[in-house]
Structures are given as structure tokens and as C-alpha cells.
Length: 402
Ligand code: ACO
Image (cartoon, rainbow, N blue to C red; front, side):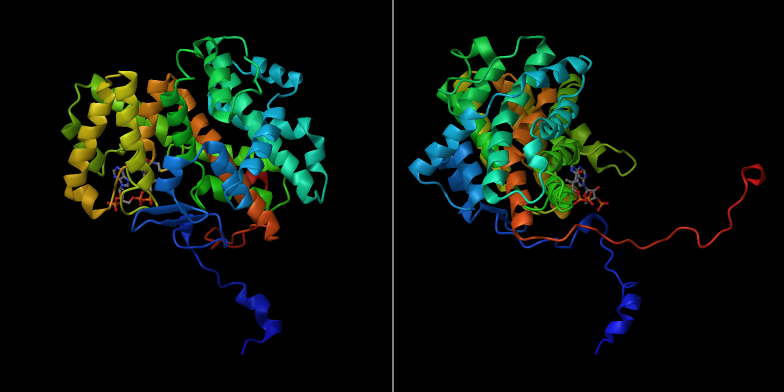
């Protein structure tokens, strides 16, 4: 039996799992994934069915509230979101403050953090469920306006205001592409593609950004601050930033003459830092089920839009070679969700630097669901331990003696 009075001594025993490769941080009822079998489900519904039949806003409801909405619940959710899409006019000054060419992800994380300052009610301690819900609705609504305006600002175009007559995705495309509305984004193929991409990115259990959102929120930080931190975590090229890195890699291979064998060789060379971007995953040791859906969508969309993109051919050749190569086979490295998503974003007309922002727009309901679940579970503040390997006690030396 453990002598409770000695527990202080036991605190020296900790589990060391750098990168949390095998450490669960929470119990969660949101997303299930089996990396060995390549299975992904949102609230129990297989991703294949959801991507085929649902809309992004319905998926947002499912992830956040746990059940598929009835027609009236969905209508109410959608209406509430439409009512909150306007952002405070003073927020527009932030856009003028960023130097031209500043990365959209840097802008997004600051603007979402700034929403807390514009919504002081969100900072009140002990918000009740209705008050929390209102902030959730506001965040979903305003994020699409902010993302569109970041894009508009990068072009030097005037901002386009949201319109309540459109559903969430159409409204987003309307604010983003403006005058191209009728000819581009209102086409069902474009709306469907956008819905599908957002759905496939909507949640992925305890990944780097979701864990960041939960751990920041566990200090009782407000929703906007927690999501802003998640956006920063997503930015890295080993996480959401990979979709931008994939297209940049494919472009480079194209410019280099399209010799995929040469680049596969580089990816295998341990003295070369190059990695095949969009390949490999911490959890999937089988085909990423999202990649399968996106690959098919990519073919369909490019065909329907009449686009012939050489970069897609290079991507397919890389995949074909890698899937037969013992290096990738032994390490179970398969294409992940980002391998094909960028090709679709490009076909829809988005510049490469916007890709990770689009990932963030899709991931938002997942982050919110993770934050809400963490609060409802009354989880304690996240605070990992360490194994100290630094200097033992040393005496302070005066600066002249160093
Ligand atoms: N190209 C070449 N080799 C790779 C790749 C790759 N894309 N990914 C992993 N490897 C190799 C590693 O060099 C390592 O080899 P070794 O055993 O000989 O040392 C082995 O496979 C295992 O790789 P780790 O980095 O240890 O695996 P980890 O689980 O830590 O990393 C990660 C997963 C970060 C996704 C990694 O596969 C990678 O860097 N991929 C490219 C970036 C990418 O596509 N990221 C997006 C992830 S999906 C998402 O966030 C939405």
C-alpha cells in the first residue's frame, strides 16, 4: 500500500513520452479514428457517409452538439450564424495595419484573438451554456467573413459584406470571389467541392492544434484566445501548413522537369532534409480515408471545371512510385489529407498562401467542439511534467568573473 504521506516523493516518477506518441490526454466522444485500419468517424458517423451526404454547417452542428440536427434545429443554427457574420467596423483597421504580403495565417490568428477584445462579454467568468453558445455562433459566423477579407485585402480589393440570403458556404464564396460570384462560386460543383473540403478537415481528435486549443482553454482562457492559439499551431508545415508545402513542392518538381524518381530518392536520403510533403501521418499507418475521398473529388472537380493541371499528374506519379517503394511501404507512409486538397483549392482560384487558412476554416467546428467538451468535462488545467537534465546547483558568478 502507498503511504499517502510519502506521495510527494512519488512525484519524482513521471511518464516520459516526448511528442505524446502514446499518451492519452483526455476521454473524448467527438471523433474516432483507427490509424491502422484507416477509419475516421465524427460522432460515430463514417467520414465517407458524411462527406457524401452532409453539408459543412450540418457537420459543425453535429460535432459541437453531438447529434445531427433536425430540419428546424439546422434552420435555427444557420439563421443565427447568418445574423452574426458582420464584424465590428473597427476590426477593418487591423487589415490596414498588416504590411502587404503578410502571411494570411499570421493575420488570422491575430484577428481571431482580437475578437475577444471586441466581445468583452466572452471574458466574464462563469459564462452559462447560452452565453457560451452565443460566442460559439459568433465565432463561426465571423471567421468566414474574416477569412474572406484577408483574401480580399491581399488583392487590394474592397471588402464584400455578407448576405443573409446565402447559406454558409455560398456566403463565404460570395465574400471571397465577389464579382466572380455568378460564374464561379455559385456553380454547384464549386459549392460541393468547398463543402466537402471543409467537412473533411472539420475534426481529427487530439492532433497538435486541437490539443493546443484544449490546453489553452484549460487555463480558463476565453474561446477566441483558445482558437487563436489553435490557428498558430495549425500553421506549421508538419501540421496544416503541409497543404501549402505540398503545392510548392509539386511546383518545384514541375519546374525541375517533373522527374518524380529523383525527388523520391531525395525524400529517402537521410542526409537530405527534404520530405515528401503530404505523405505520412502520426496516427494513420494506412491510407488516410480523407485522402481517398479528396483524390476522387479532385479528379471529378478538375474534369467538370475543364482544368488540366500538370501538377495533378505529378502528384499521381509520386503517389504511384511511393506506394511501391520499400522505404515508404516499410514505414507505412501514405498520402494524407493534404496531398490532394491544395490541387482543388487551386482549381477553385485560391492562392497557395490561403490554403492553411481554408484548413482552419474547416477545422473551426472541431476546435470548438474540443474546447466545449473540455469545459463540460471540467478538465483540470493541462500541465505536463518533464525530466530535468540541466545543470545541478551552481553558485551565481558576478558578471566580471564570467
Ligand atoms: N517523407 C520521407 N520520409 C518520411 C516522411 C516523408 N513525408 N514522413 C516520415 N518519414 C520517415 C522519417 O524520416 C522516419 O524515418 P526513420 O524511421 O528512418 O527515421 C519515419 O518515416 C517516421 O517518421 P517520423 O517523423 O518519426 O513520424 P512522425 O509520426 O513523428 O511524423 C509527420 C509524422 C510529421 C506527418 C511526418 O510523416 C511528416 O513530416 N510528413 C510530411 C509533412 C506532412 O505531410 N504533414 C501533414 C500531416 S497531416 C496534417 O497535419 C493534416
